[in-house]
Amino acid sequence: MAQRIALSKSATLEIPNQMTKASKSNISKIASEKFGKTKFLIGTIKRYPDKVFTVGEMVIFVNSAEITQQKGILKVQKLASDDTSQHDKTYSSKIVAIDGKDVLVANRIVEGINLMTFTTFNPSENFCITGFIQYPQKDYAKAKAALENLISGIKYAN
Image 1 (cartoon, helix red, strand yellow):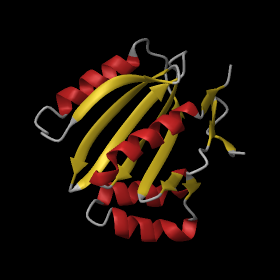
Image 2: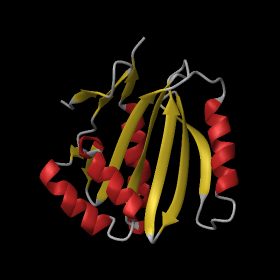
Image 3: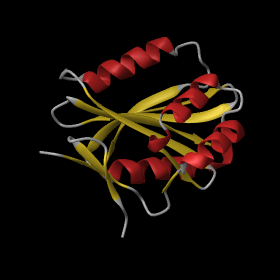
Image 4: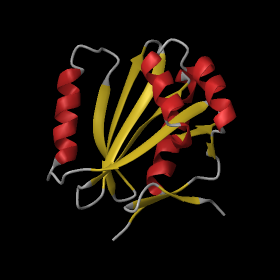
């Protein structure tokens, strides 16, 4: 049976069977092997080691936060992200439905690293779950499946 962890009072996540929480002792190794050139990504996973997971060769970071309610925020975020990234030829984004949840999914290459970022909100649009999946180019389909499993494991509190 998969493990369910609390992201906050507002949501829990059932960790898919193939996904494992990165041990604190492995964070430095993951950072140097996977994100050697990217200071931002290294800093993110070192600052928040309890939010780092792995699936095979992929590194997954999951964060969550209470936010001020804003109707239609996912579409606003997509427009802002698309505008900011308009000159990035590696960037693409779309809003997809996964297990009844709307998710903004963006793909890009950052300093030679393939990243799939994701953002989703609870139905009240006052709680956000966001993160990224770093994956080898050959594993795009696996990264997409990992995202679907991750999003399917989210359960919001009433």
